[in-house]
Image (tube, helix red, strand yellow):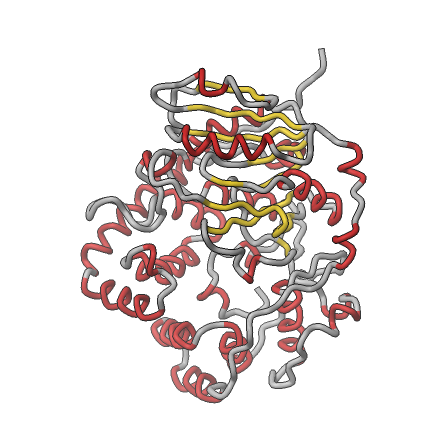
Length: 446
C-alpha cells in the first residue's frame, strides 16, 4: 500500500498485496495521461513529493483509472504526518482516532504520534471520488459481441424455486442470444418438472450434496462456452446483462467483468457506479474467460458451507496479474431471499455467529486472511471487524451503533475471545490441511 496506515484500515484488501510479477495496482504518476492528471487534485500539504505522488496514484485508482500506465513496484516510506494527513482525507475521524489508539497500543513513540495527529487536525475529509469518464463506451462497437461466442451461465440453487423462476425468466429476455444456462440443483425435493417450460438452452445438474463451491466447480467443468457467467438464484437482471459483460471484457481487454449488486428498492451505490479496477469479486454477478480457471484453478472447497470463497478466488486472479473490471452496466438486483441457499446452510453472515458458542468469524474468513495476508494482518482485521459484528446487520453503517459495538466488545470480551480463539483454531486446521483447489483440465477434442 502507498501509505502504511492503510494496513490498519484495510488490512485484507486486494490492493495491499503486490502481484506475483512484483507489480502493484497503483500507477506511477509520471506515467498517467495528462487527461487523467487534470481530473485529480494535487495536494501540496504533504511533506514529501513521494506522498504527493502516492496520493495522486490512490486517487487515480479510486476514480476508476484503468489503463496501461506502469505501476509502482515499491513504495518509499513517508512521514507520520503524511500518513495521518492521508487518512484524515480519506476516512471518518473515528477511524483516524482508531489508528492513533492502535499505534499507541503497539508501543510507537506517543509524543511523535500525538504530535503528528494534532498537526493534521485541520485536514478536511475530501468528498467521495467521482468516476473518470470513458466516453467511448456509449458508442463502442464490440467485436466480441459480433463474434457471438457461446456464454455458459452458471446458477447453483438450493430450495429457491420461486426465486429461480424469476431469474430464469430474466434470462429468457436477454438481448444476447448465444448462451446456455447450467443450473446445479441441490433442492429437496428435486423438482425436474419445474424446468420444462423455459425457453432457454438449459441444462440441469442434480446434485445430492448441498455444497455451493462443488456446484459451481461442477458446472464450470461441464460448461461448453469459452466464457463463464456466474449468477445466483435470488437476483434479478436486466435484458442486457450478458451483452454488457461481454462489451466490458472487450472494451478494456479484461479477463473478468465484475458486475455490481444493489439491494431491491435501491440504486447502485455511488462508489460502484463507474468503471474501476475491481477490488472484490462476487460469484453472483460476474463474467470471465474460462481460461482464467485454467490459470488459477477452480474454487477452493475449504470454503464449503462457509464464506469468502469468491473473495479468495478473486484474489488469486488479482495476484496472477489478470485484469478484473468493476462493471456498473452489468448490475443486478439482490433480492436477498429469506430462505434457502447459504441461509439454510447456516453461514449466511461471515461475522455474526448463529449462537453464543459458535466461532466468530466463520473459520473460513480467518483461513483466507491468514493464508494470504499473514497472522498479523488477520489480527488487525479482527480488531476492525469484530466490534461491528456485535450489532445487527441492518445497523452496520450506523456510526452511533459502531461506537456501541466497541463498548459491547469490551463488555462481552470473555465471550468474544472464546469465539475468536475457536475460529482461529479451526482456521489453523484448514491451513494445515491446505487449499482444496482443483485444476481445470483442458478438454481435448475426440
